[in-house]
Length: 222
Ligand SMILES: N[C@@H](CCC(=O)N[C@@H](CS)C(=O)NCC(=O)O)C(=O)O
Image 1 (cartoon, protein in one colour):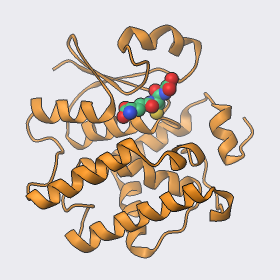
Image 2 (cartoon, rainbow, N blue to C red):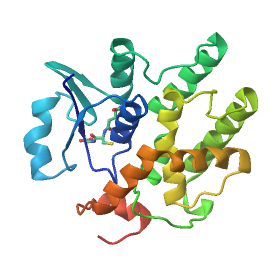
Image 3 (tube, protein in one colour):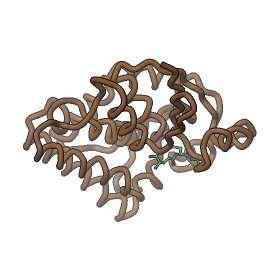
Image 4 (cartoon, rainbow, N blue to C red):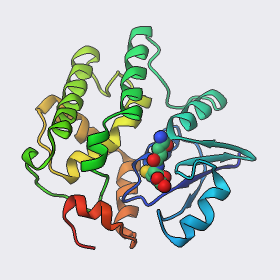
C-alpha cells in the first residue's frame, strides 16, 4: 500500500476534504501531503503531481488520479469494502445523481459561500444573490427529500459517496450561519459530528496561511 493524497489547505479546500474524508471513512491508510494553495510552494510543486494543477490528487505508486470523484471511483474499484453507492438500484441512481449534481453544479454557493472552516457567522440570506439563495434552497429540498425517501441515517441510507459530496456543503452552511428546516439541519449535525471531520477542523484551526479572496466572502480581514 503506497497511497499518497495531495491536498490543499484544510481550512479552504473542500474538494480535498471530500477525497480525504472518503479515504478515512473507508479506513484506508494513506500518506497526506499538503500544499498550501497559491503559495510559492504550490506554484513550484502542484504541476509535478498533476497536469490539471488542482487538488486533490491521489498517487497509487506511479498511477496518478486527479479529481475527487475520479479518486473515489478508482479507490472503490481497486480496494475492498470502501464507501460506495447504495446497493438498491433506485437508491443508487438517486445517490449518483445528487453526487454529480454537486460535483458539476452549485456554482453560486461555491462562489459566495466558499469553504472557510475557521469562520462561524450568522448571515442573512439577503446577503447572497438570488442564484445562491435558490441553490441553498435546492440543497435543503434535496436533503429533506432524501431523508423522507430513505429514512436516514445518511442521505441514501448508509454513508455513501453522496454524503461525502455534501459534507463540505453542510460545513459551509455552518460557516455562514445558514438556517435550514429541521430535517435538512439533521444532515449538518451528522456531518459535523463525524470523527474525521472533527480532526480536519482541528487541523484547519492550526493553519496559518490565509487566502484574502476567500476571507473577503466572509468579510474577515486577513
Ligand atoms: N472538480 C475538481 C475540483 C478541484 C478544485 O477545484 N480544487 C481546488 C481546491 S478546493 C484547487 O485546486 N484550486 C486551485 C486552482 O484552481 O488553481 C475535483 O472534484 O477534484
